[in-house]
Image (cartoon, rainbow, N blue to C red; front, side):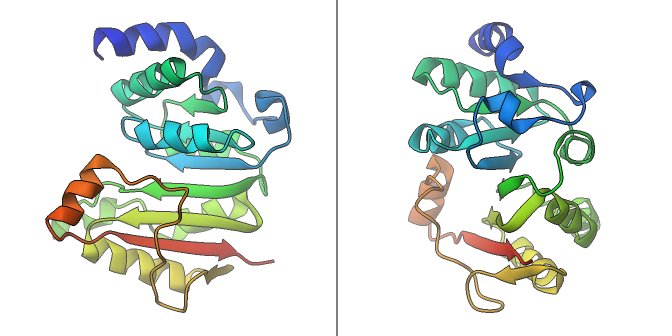
Amino acid sequence: MTESQQAAYDKYWPSKGLTVAGGMLDLAAVFGNNGPVVLEIGFGMGSSLVAMAAAAPQSNYIGVEVHTPGVGRLLHLMGEQGVENIRVFCHDAVEVLAQCIPDSSLDRVQIYFPDPWHKKRHNKRRLIKPEFVQQLRAKLKVGGIIHMATDWEHYAEQMMEVMSAAEGFANQAQPFCYSERPDYRPLTKFEQRGQRLGHGVWDLLFEKQG
């Protein structure tokens, strides 16, 4: 971590950090309200998550990231911008979901630009797999959304295949169609640069059925 990231971590982690050792969350107690809860898995350096939370103060956000510099940067941005409606785990998402997130508690799960593991022999390491999707389904409310985005076309196709076959979900676009980027997902600098170079980005929004 940089000095500023470490300083932000030291200052804000006690009030904004969550640990798996803390067990199952009481979300209303964690946030002090009963607002909608959005979980983002793999928020990178945190700028888009902070922007989303700042734009939707009535919603509550939980960020999960395994890399401490990203957590430090997120906390730095939160402090800099006075954003109070994010809590953060620095831990593996599968364990966070299993041990800390109550069933039927989330309004949306966001997975933006996950590691594509683009070499064919590494494809099996990709996060979006049928068993993981069902783990997410258990945590979503009926009507809750899984929102994925990737700039790797092959991964987008795999995501679409997995989600279209997943029990209990319906595509918010037409079957086997990608969605327009919702206004709430900020364009990243990386994405803007990619657009200028003619690179595609694919958004998938699937809704949990009753």
